[in-house]
Image (cartoon, rainbow, N blue to C red; front, side, top):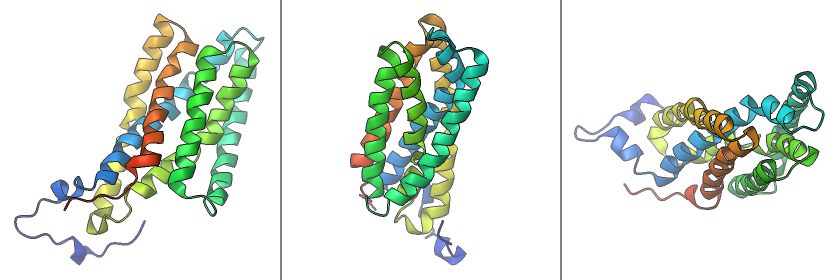
Amino acid sequence: MPEIKEEELVMDENEHAAKKLFQHTHFVWAIIAQFFYVAAQVGIAALFINYCTEKKVGIDNEYASYLLSASLVLFTVGRFAGTALMKIIAPNKLLALYALINILLCFIVVIIPGILSVYSLMAVFFFESIMFPTIFALGIKNIGRYTKAGASYIIMSIVGGALVPVLMGYLAQTYSTPFSYVVPLVCFVFVFLFGIYGYKIRAHV
């Protein structure tokens, strides 16, 4: 996070900071993408154990909890691996690629029976690992004196993790836990769109 000098934040008398900030389209896209990413992350983890036990592949709650721990290890490994890859691949391109992979993995999670779907769900953790910091960094890029305020808005967008998983729970109860994973599938579509289009800086100021 770059340090912004307070004197740079002095506004003209008739200037509205929020209005100026939201004229940065890549920043607005970042809020949307972060909202849906955190929604996906929370929902995926929250229903993980239920998903594993409902697949009828011999996984009980205890073993499912071990698989969840292994998935979180994959998340950690993915964060370091993604950071290394960003030295040779542009962050937005890697973000879009990982989002696309997770869309395909979530499709398997929803549709395919058997243990393959469980492994696919675990793999989602690896590929979602870079998303939060990458969306954040791309969202506050080149917004100058609005950086601190912009960062606050992006952080507040994590409310998606409190709202959207409620829909997953409803779908899980009404239909099935595997079907509920269509929600994170859709969420990753927004992350993908941000990575291929929304990240572009088009400030109309």
